[in-house]
Amino acid sequence: MKISVVFYSMYGHIYRMAQAVAEGASQVEGAQVELRRVPETLPEEVLEKMGALEAQQVLKEIPVCTIEGLDELATFDAIIFGAPTRFGVVCGQMRQFLDATGGLWSQGKLVGKVGSAFTSSATQHGGQESTILSLHTTLLHHGMVIVGLPYTFQGQMRIDEITGCSPYGASTIAGGRGERQPSENELDGARFQGRHVAEIASRMFSP
Image (cartoon, rainbow, N blue to C red):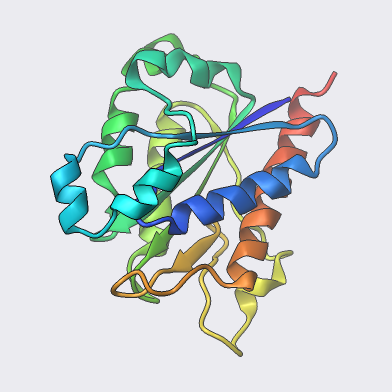
């Protein structure tokens, strides 16, 4: 059973969540989990002005899921997408990547695969749920079986702290300047989601 965590991260918040998702998925017996990042579309000088170069250097260790190599996606049983929100919808880098999957769609290569999504936003109500739902729309067009973050992850019902996560998927709050890193509760949600997706995929695809 092969699982891919495909993500875009500018400042490292989604990368940390992606690592936690992969950790959770790896706990399921037989799961082979691979991290992939989508191509960056911004030039280096823009990333420098945005203060994102340091995080981008760390991300270079993660293989890029190139537009030329999209057929690789069809080799996975489950794909978990992670991307930050931009004005309530998924960021442009992930959108451009997904818009290039028309060939996979026309051949039905992702039909029946398990799909899931997680996100981040600067503020507590910055469009986390709408961003995940915007990803779900694309996954439904591909015929994927959508898996969210069920309420059996009770961390999403906490009221003793500010936290991300919802039944749509794991999420984190980054802060207006990216100063807040994912909390342990948010990382727990990401691990739970990764494990839950892997368990569903195992039931669907194990002989």
